[in-house]
Amino acid sequence: MGDEEYAPTLQSVLDQTDLKWIFVGGKGGVGKTTTSCCLSLLLSKVRKNVLIISTDPAHNLSDAFRQKFSADPTLVNGFSNLFAMEVDPNPKQSELAALNETSGGMLADIAGAIPGIDEAMSFAEVLKQVQSLDYDCVVFDTAPTGHTLRLLQFPATLDKALGKLDSMRAGLGGMLGQVAAMLGGPADGIDGIMGKLDQLKAVVQEVNNQFRNPQLTTFVCVCIPEFLSLYETERLVQELVKFEIDTQHIVINQIIWEAEASSSKLLRARVKMQQKYLTQYDDLYDDFHIVRLPLTEEEIRGVPALTDFSRHMLQPYTPAAVVSDSYRLQELEEECSQLRKRCAE
Image (cartoon, rainbow, N blue to C red):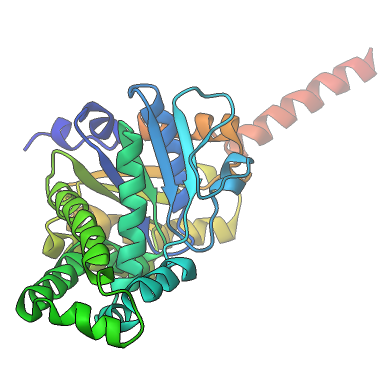
């Protein structure tokens, strides 16, 4: 296939105007938040309205944009169509307490026996809120790989769990209400809570189908040219294939170019090490868009810095020309020669 099909940029993400869900994930400390923020800035130029959500318990969106965000969508300063929110992926105690109160504690105990349902229900509530706000595109700044894989399983986990509860309700009929009344809960509480769960199930099933639709969902893998990051990226890609979630882009951050390391023994050693893993990335993912981004001298914080860095995601980075030692020595000799002439005069 031609080189143009796998251009080393994220331009194809912007060109897919039907994309609704964009996940950005990878190993911890590889620049996921910077990548997702830059991508959301680029998307805001071509989409009607964009929402970026942090699902990492250690939220970094506020630090990246230098603006405080909360669990409610907040307009990013300087934009009219870019919103950000930081959500807690763990279940709220108030939600669990309401479940206990409604069903006399029995349904909550049953639900608690299903692994992962608490987090899945919390995530489903977030998705329900996001869908009700009708954003054109949603970017997820996810937690490190392990947590992200569990998050992607939530729709299927909740769908399976709600199916089990629905089957139990159908099988036991009115007995659940009688038992709930005996335990001190309202007799009609079961129907109420199951009605709410049915509504949630419809949302989850729709989202689950959308996640598996490559026209609506894609996953951008972020990494650095080191062994552990390469290993985590391969693990992530394999799991995404199992989940039937589209992934076509790999962003490699913190690259040092040889032309910029000529004066440092340490940097030259790092370049040599990085080149080995960059070659492995190319070999493993020859049918991916591989975006190479530089290690910067300063932190990338604030909209101006993010905007400036984001251009490298559409136009491959080219290192600035570095003056060689021999050329610099020649310049110094010429300056010394001119100074001698002036002194002689």
